[in-house]
Image 1 (cartoon, rainbow, N blue to C red):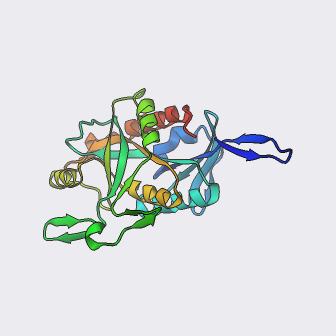
Image 2: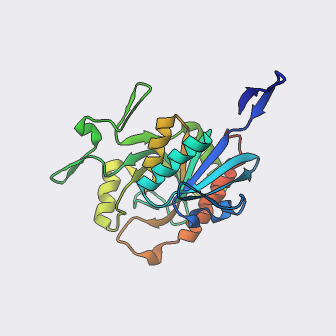
Image 3: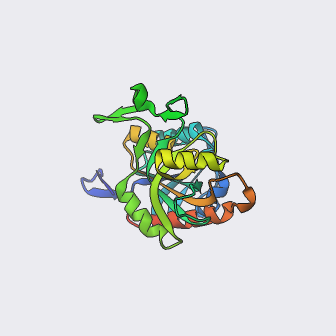
Length: 252
């Protein structure tokens, strides 16, 4: 809650905007139905409204890191949100203990592609010696932490929906579609969930100094690609319910 002096000298409480981002419309149909009419901003679908007393801006970014970074930048530049919630579906790595329809909450996001490959060994950007971001005395290489207070609140709200696990997420440009690479990435990063947008949104929010949380419904187990075993609809439904439960709490 922000406080601002009005013209009569009295202090007024001003609610901060909550920014929501998903990559595709299917991930946010339930939430979109509670907001206003869709309009376009900077080439992206956007809706505004109130949910559980929160002023909400919801942007559908499009798939991938560049689109997600664009959405997060527009959100921060145009609306100055107090927090950002990235949500949608993702794939769980085999040893994460997650099943289709479960929820995952990111403790940190890792860029899985940025770095150097020497032989069969991957090195992140720290190996190059060039951080992706320097801010407030911190140097960020491949890893971006998410907001711990929001994580605790998200875990509480998510548990009202289905089983929820928190851990490391990996953001990739190429989705993993083989058992071999699934185990390689799981071991390399100690990760529970793979996606295509998270690190980019966490990166942009770190630039602006805005708290960010990422919640994903598990649509599939990362393995040899078999879409017959996926359930995107269930994953998206559970994820949106968790986000709406989170919005009931005093997150701002």
